[in-house]
Length: 211
Image (tube, rainbow, N blue to C red):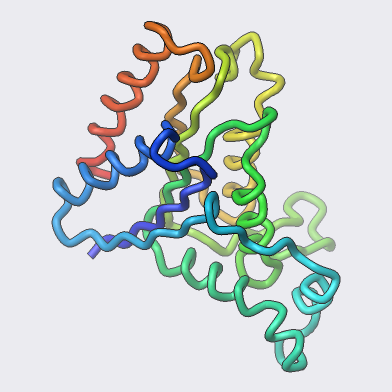
């Protein structure tokens, strides 16, 4: 049975296009792939805590000698990492905010990028210091952008620190098979937005059959 982790990053409710696209995709996927098990992780409307000094100290401490306080500092992080490791597919829905991702998505990233758990660091290796530990998984990023031209070769591509950042982070931990479905012109609406939204829906319907 395929396990899917769906991370919802928009702080908006029903008016969120990325939230709506994720919901439609998951509905189509469960209709096409009977028995798929979906875990929902809401980070847009439920705030995750930022990492603290205690968290950092605990994360870099020998796991075998962590104090009970250190273990408590990492409890949520461990839960989120375990959730990620247990899944076969990862879907992240996150609009572009100020050229980056919403704060809830960034907080989730900081909680799951863990040395010794999702990647290893080997400074003695001059060619490959970062060793991924989250292997054999497939990723999907659903994103919406207020303006246009943020895709590869677009006029605003250099300002895109949203899905590009997510791809880099996922690649660091080992998820390199990642597709990005983007809707543009969200801020302005009209036919340009509708065409982009419908194209995203069509691609997601295709992905639902074999993701």
